[in-house]
Length: 212
Image (cartoon, rainbow, N blue to C red):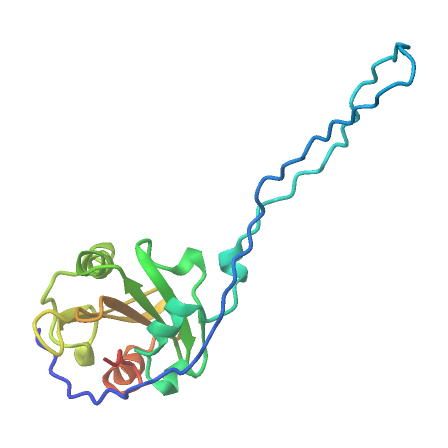
């Protein structure tokens, strides 16, 4: 299947400056002082040694500084420059449980009708593996079907032979998954009401991106 869709991608420039300071607790050192007293008479005073006093401390649980860090961080700012403004208006950090295993950065954006994830990968191989995983889990062959306009599942190319898109439905709703090889991105749009045509029409619009 070849999906030929003319898409005008809106350019987004995010002029944000975020300062992130990571504070850590290192080990502490105690300087031992030695005090020498010179007696006026050669008198030896015997003292009874006392046991050192140790104050027990209660260990604290480690803090997940990544989850609590302000959004967006520097990597997320860069990723959001590839999200069209209409979609980027309501975005946040993707929970660890929802992001792709090898994604280095992931954001979730919510529209009026569906949610969409944009995920950045370190290289083309990781990006292709992530896209292929959606096909494998849903038993979709490359080139399967005609077009998502005619129903799911379907899989084909868009905007060149390396950029691919697939659509399918399951108990979670109607899905459109696509990649952008020049950016090492995979994006996933999910319509929880299962309306495939609605989410595919959105994907064909300039609001889906990604923008260069």
